[in-house]
Image (tube, rainbow, N blue to C red; front, top):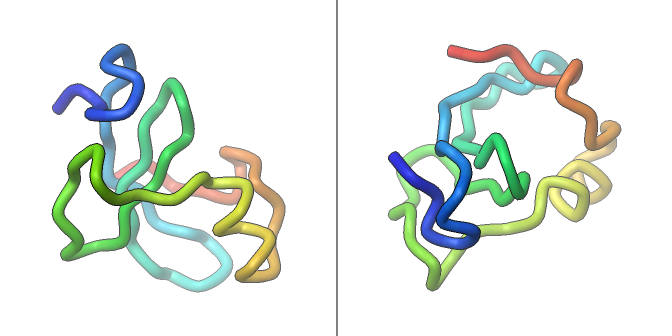
Length: 66
């Protein structure tokens, strides 16, 4: 699916290695959506903000592509 924020990247499902939690992330702008959340331009969080709030670095090596 094309990212509703940047309209350039693809939204993919990933697992956060540290927690095992599954999220969706845009491979271009790094906007994330939690599993089960509707993916739209009305919601979503920046990966950097989410990572900081959850105690890990906002780098793709922290994620596993599903």
